Image (cartoon, rainbow, N blue to C red; front, side):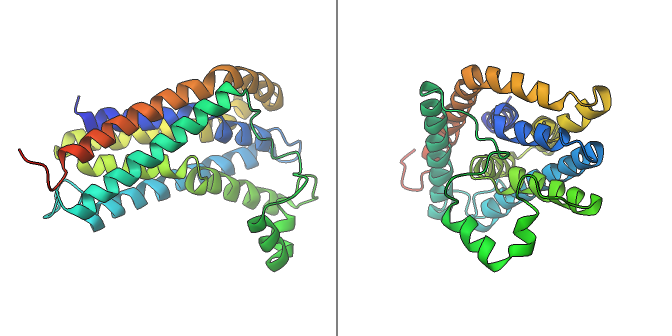
Length: 255
């Protein structure tokens, strides 16, 4: 197994063990109104989000000349991209480790924050009707609930600040693989593992209807103790692989 394929598998597992996506999906599936439709919409949004973020990683690698087929594979731009990705993974990994050490609770979107952030406040001011749909307890039609679940899945897997950089890093690592068979394997491996947290709530809703909230509570207890350590270790390992790759492709390195 190449180091790039190992990095892709590690990043996929980091998303798999990140608790936020599954917790949000279970909350969506735990709603009493249209839970199955909402769970499937969340899954579709999550799959789309993962594809979106991974695609950005591929485009960044190509634009910087850091992909395996690039004419300037060892350019300063490619080196800089690798350093930024390694640094980002390192920062997220250390943050996860600190949160695990402090036993910080997993954020629950069903609980309204006392003081919304500046971005949320500005969005509420500019788009009051649209943002009202994302407030817990708001009465919505079936179409609005499905649309909200779809957007929530996309936002969590495609835009979330803890998942988005991981998927970008995976796309970048996939672009480094020269062998077509291994590259295809990397894409399939990452896609299958990374989307599990987004798809699992829909599966649970089919197999065990009305069990989503009970599973969420138990899952949070386990992940609070162990999940963040696992994710932190995976991200630190991936940061090491990407950082080592950056050093190997350092344009000014002799030999």
